[in-house]
Image 1 (cartoon, helix red, strand yellow):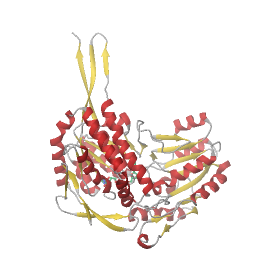
Image 2 (tube, helix red, strand yellow):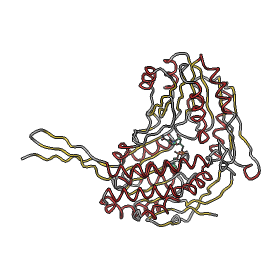
Image 3 (cartoon, protein in one colour):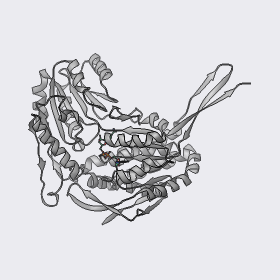
Image 4 (cartoon, rainbow, N blue to C red):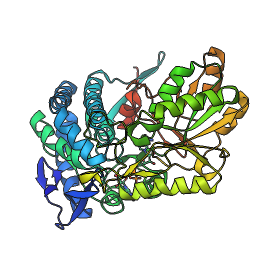
Amino acid sequence: MQRIQNFIDGQYLDAQELGWLDNYNPATGKVYSMIADSNEADIELAYAAAKAAQKDWENTSSENRFKILNRIAELIDINNTEFAKAESIDQGKPFWLAKNEITRAAQNFRFFATSAMQFSSESHQMEGFAINYTLRQAIGVVGCISPWNLPLYLFSWKIAPALATGNCVIAKPSEITPMTASLLGKICNEAGLPKGVLNIVHGLGPKVGNAMVSHPKIKAISFTGGTSTGKHIASIAAPMFKKLSLELGGKNPNIIFADCDLEKAVKTSVQSSFLNQGEICLCGSRILVQKSIFESFKTAFLEEIKKLKVGNPLNDDTKVGAIVSKMHFDKVLSYIELAKQEGGKILAGGHSVQLEDDLKDGWYIAPTVIVNLSYDCRTNQEEIFGPLVTLTPFDTEEEALTMANSTEYGLACSVWTNDLNKAHRVAASIESGIVWINCWLLRDLRTPFGGVKYSGVGREGGLEAMRFFTEPKNVCIKYN
Ligand code: NAD
């Protein structure tokens, strides 16, 4: 059985304690590989390698950093099919979707490669007296921790800007989806990334992840994952005054006004509800629909959902693949039970799906649509992160905003309307870090990315990421 080792100082190594964890294929429900079960000793080893590489990497010209990161992007593109297959098997997502996501991971490297060349800082003149300039320097050794839903995409979204700005990195992918991060090490060596600049450590969050966050010399942590994990990480890192970026959970509203283009709203809402089995932090799980079009939206939406085939992630016609783990599968099913107890009526799905042959023990759930729930019940307030959405009618714009802003989260929101004034008004009043008007998941990598309230602190993307991974120092020079 394949063993997924750590990648430290340019070499693939077993964990120091020689322990292994099972890695499952969600499509079959079977163990198909083993992951290094790392601990503090592996973090110490990775830190030593990163520390030794730090000065040289920081002093590497931005043009050379660009060349290496750009080469990593090219190699990911060349190996797209291998990576996408690995991602699909590891995560349960349809292969065609994995291909898109691997392309997007390459784009992350390419985008931040060019950012390395273009990053600049400010100067402030005190006329006649002095000039200040801001030196933006690499932080040093930084830690990046990522979740299981978009494994290589989110991993690269952190690593690429950290490397572009001259930091050495210790990165931990989710123990549930470690495969493509592991393949990345080989590509980094091939692209000429110096040894020790990127170190990938596998294992359990509370064990090796915790050791990374607690390490006194790792000066910044960029984390994407659940809100409760984020809270825990903040409680350890904040007293050590580490720089922290926390991208956390969400419960995103998708607001459909009566004056929208209904056909487009329906088609995109199917995507924003069920793409990647609803396991995207930006999915809109609470669909709020203005009363006058509630019935027509519902009918058209349910009609579209019938076209979504739940199936083998490796098949081209599969639209909904497997749920990432048994634990998550049970969690989503438990929320369907909760919704029923709360008085919800299931209009579609509401159950697991058993496929045949090798896939009979895989974790599949039918796309589920629930109505008749109050906007403030638990089903509508807590993050479920699966193929489950609720439809809730509203009367007025004010009521839609009350419902939309009622959760403790604030990551993303979609708004469907053809009234320009309303679109601007609602966008300004929504409590979230991202608002899409008449679209969903359109991503420009230069824009700030992140959430408010319990969805996180700090922003990623473009200059925000370049600034996060650098320490600004003001230098003031007095004129003679
Ligand atoms: P998780 O919090 O369980 O795990 C995320 C990562 O943190 C994993 O690598 C895990 O091993 C590690 N970890 C766990 N405990 C840790 C600890 N004590 N110390 C250090 N590291 C630890 O999240 P998940 O279940 O992998 O991912 C799903 C969550 O991620 C959802 O809540 C989703 O909304 C969120 N998410 C947010 C965004 C965003 O951009 N805001 C993007 C994707 C996913």
